[in-house]
Image 1 (cartoon, rainbow, N blue to C red):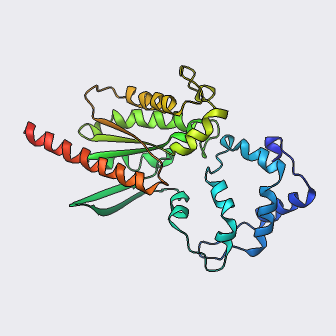
Image 2: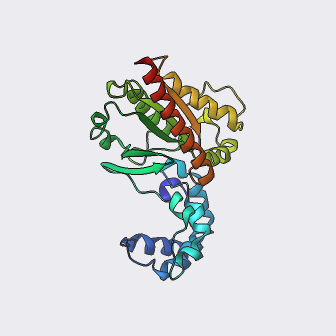
Image 3: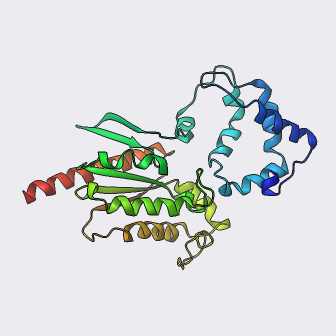
Length: 268
């Protein structure tokens, strides 16, 4: 709080924060402590905490915080079982390489999930020679967010750097790339108060609150970084918490892969 030049409304709220920080070690399968419920509610309504939350992009605050706080009574209730929205809004940092298979229609897909943090990349980039398709997922709402591992770096700038290295990598020469610009709902909400021109994209010349133009600008920035004009790059704007939209997108992914395979058969 002090680092952000924010102060609590009361000494009691300051003690609440200290209590939570000093006793925050909750194991994975433990019930949520009932003694935390009142302090968290009080802190959520504290004006100093609200001011700190508005600066959340400066220290990597989770963008789904408000969702979980607004559902705090349900989450803290005895016998709580997460619903689909709870799961979709949760985040577990990917470490290492995780492989899974799933069926979609008549096709079976093998998907490999990898960690995007700097320390993780050297572990996986060489593992994907000749994959059919690369799915590159970017939180478009991260245009004004710092990296968790480096507050001096911007999430979108970092994503652009990683994208450039992958889109032009030897290992993905023959792979189609599908770019998902995710969290469009949060992006739209942020723009009016935080236009992209204030966060390292001064050449954007559209209206600051125009979600359609701003998102197209960011998509074009990604596409422009491919050195091969013939490279197959497909862009999708998504909101992963909307399960219907995600299903439509996955069908599009399926059609992309099938069409690419058909084209290769024609060429051979």
